[in-house]
Length: 235
Image 1 (tube, rainbow, N blue to C red):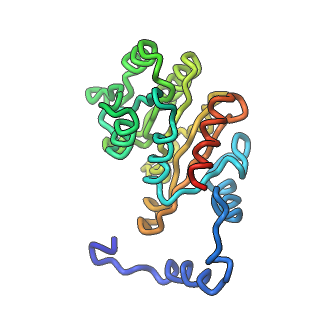
Image 2: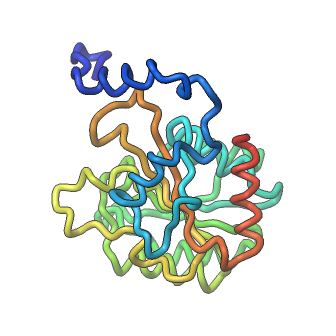
């Protein structure tokens, strides 16, 4: 917005100005993010039925979160994502692997819905695929994936022992909120990561305020170790 000539609202400036007067602002922040901020996220963005304060991890925007998620995977591990996709996900996955990123098809003749047969076939045929990425609402297509498709993705992840990554940063920018299905509502017992942020809906891209919510880490030792590696890399 600033690049297009918009003025920064006074309330945003006040948010930045107040902490500058506090000495603690100049100390190291908690690795997972300010505790007060994580409490706020749990109350207003997440679901305490499946998420705790310790399951919320802040990043310098979701760009950093994407890089950490992919760069801390085991060397041979792959994450399959949608095609078309958001370039940052594809680039990070490809750089981690040192080759082309793996994709499943979004059916443009059916409004961009997930081609579930293509996804399950790809996961079943490649033992190196350990994660499934869904962008909902999707960027760049704008499609809000229906519940039945998302529940099928969760079932595929469970059947093939994959974890899920849902990029949900646009969750508050749908025309009809009743059509949006959140990962927390359907994930069940599958290990998963939800990616969220505030820079789209305020809009405040310069805030660099993104976070992930980790679901069901206690249910899988490998996934729990992977998430711990992400936290350590932030330290």
